[in-house]
Amino acid sequence: MLERVKTGIYGLDDLIGGGIPKNHVILLSGQAGAGKTLFGLQYIAHGATNNEKGIFITFEQNKKDILSQTQNFNWNLERLEGEDKVKILDFKPSDMHIANILLKMEQTILDFKPKRLVLDSLSTLSIYAEIMTSMELLNLMGVDIKTATFIPSGEAITRRTITEFLGRIKNLNTTALIISELPETSTFLSRDTISEFIADGVILLNYVGIVGESSRTIQVRKMRGSNHSKDFIPYDIVEGEGVVLKPEEASKLLMK
Image 1 (cartoon, rainbow, N blue to C red):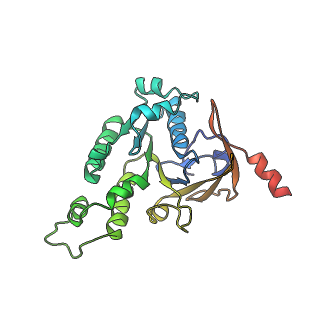
Image 2 (tube, one colour):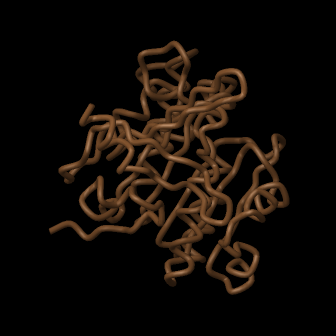
């Protein structure tokens, strides 16, 4: 039987067989405003409260801004960080060299020994991957450019970089959430178009905002090793609590 990790997201664990399978990598994809970052912070905070260390890695915001987002919720991330249960790594644009990110991430995880990892976001990482050179990618893969049988370019660099990055994360012995932008018009489930196939699970946060009103639903599209719900379940972002699923509302809709 798979050991499972509780998400701390009210109502979610019941949909996925009791939690995320331990050491799996889960893609969390959604539109702007869906609450992806809050979802990841809630997952980290829940683990730390239960003595499971967590690392939150951000390429989009600085540490101060990340902590400020949690002030309306009862997560006490600053206190948990002070107790050495949480670590927040923020990378500035000047730091965005893929090999350096991997080196710092792997070294921090080796030293800190977390059980949980959140990366926010893969979409930003893929943007920087697009400007990598073929030589940098081959070096990242440990391939001698003099003996290389192929020279990647363009989209191939991005896709191969994401594949390499997620492969490294899978070897870190953490249960990881990898955040990505959900394209509005694409049939893919991530901006990079490859991570949904590599990840062990995919959770979609769907957000529709119309003239001052909004609707949010969550769907588990994939969860290896789990008999999971495939329904669209409404959720809210509740002050003091965070992301809260409302499966009872979904049941009412299905009965109509």
